[in-house]
Amino acid sequence: MRISDKFGIPHISTGAFFRDQLERNTDLGQRIRKYMETGSLVPDELTCEVVEDRLKQDDCRAGYVLDGFPRSLPQARILDQMLAKRGERLDLAIDLEVPDDEIVNRLTARRMCPVCGKIYNLKFNPPASDGGICDRPACTGQLVTRSDDREETVRARLGIYHEMTAPIIEYYTGHRLLRSVEGDSLGPDGVFKRVESILSGLKRV
Ligand code: AMP
Image (cartoon, rainbow, N blue to C red):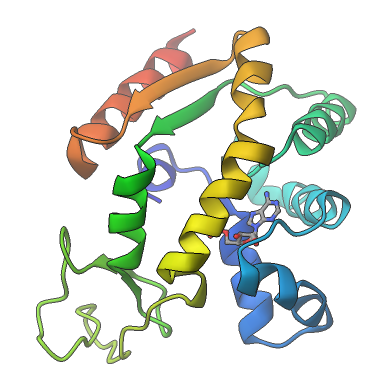
């Protein structure tokens, strides 16, 4: 989100898109519910269709940040084909490196405002009020825990990450597109600065 604000390009999060479909109980939401609730991956074909449609919108002409996509080797390959058809190619893939136990700590402490979507963390970025009400001016949302942030679901998601998603690190390393950023000790501002400097270097090329 901060990268998107800084560089003035849209933030495309497949997870946020799918959550919105679930909340609105659309046809797509009903089809993906079982995957989302167990922390499994939504099928590649469906996920790639969603991304391809999104990239057709005008705001994507000057670039975009893909967040949480691709998440499997087939998705990475389909993305390459999708971009080739558009006469584009990926500039960079950023891997934020955080140990599994720290991910469990962070995600189980994550809270979300269901009204405006603002993300909090009880340890690192708690809401101002003890009652768990969103801080945004004029927003009175009662913060909630995402159903897939329960510890057992987070551990299941990590298992899927290591099996299905981690192989794309090698894929992008082979394509000389991967940049790794240490996401454990730098803190949110430190990670942002690091990513910002990588992307700023890219813009000058
Ligand atoms: P996230 O908000 O990125 O953690 O995603 C939440 C959930 O949405 C994941 O656990 C998956 O069920 C689904 N999802 C998000 N992105 C993808 C993707 N690229 N491929 C398959 N499923 C996804």
